[in-house]
Length: 328
Ligand SMILES: [Zn+2]
Image (cartoon, rainbow, N blue to C red; front, top):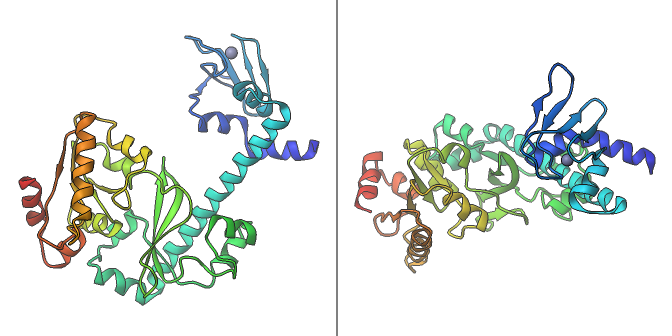
């Protein structure tokens, strides 16, 4: 048990844990220490010190100190045993994220080795290498993912649980073009678009993350919210680098909140022009919800039957799309 605890504390350093939970450290003089506001009590002047070498904290305000487990006990009001269990869960989640990162990098490397994948992107109108790179697009040829991830410590059970492989050990994204889904910069899911006859869309059974590329998109005075990732990709390729996507028409509460984090940013909603009106209805509803919280939004109408992807493939230029935006 004692050895396990040491390993746990080594693999999840106190300083890293605190920063991940939004603690802001400042260097404390010349010493190898950091200081910041105490997360354990209210204070105006920082008196919470962390020594990363010793992996310990001490607060001169409330007089409490100790290691990571002690911190979790105090901060989450848990027993020692509960704190250890909590940290073990936290670490397992961490491993999942790392495996998703490795899987994503693996897929990215495969993309240009498989002509069928590149051909598929071309058919969808996507050919700008910079754009493909910026969106982190990859390809899952199937077959060797499991072996690749085993080298990074991904066990069969773990990969199965995340959903990266199925019970037979086969790559769940086999013959799919893969996009990473991030939240706060971290890959939390993957989206795979089938290039063959399999069901077109696949996400792992976990949160789909935040709005795509939100960190870069959110700074502008307007954003374009598209339905699919290929819509987004084609918009980027046409120069609309302020385009994002919620992967579908349904926004998670987190994604909705992102869209609302500023009242002075105009949101252009451009969902698919479906024959059954589903896209248009979802767009109107979202426009309404945004208006209710004071966020200006407009619904962009494309010619009947089109989404941004098909519109550009059909020969529309950036100016054509701009016209549609201006008419909204
Ligand atoms: Zn304190």
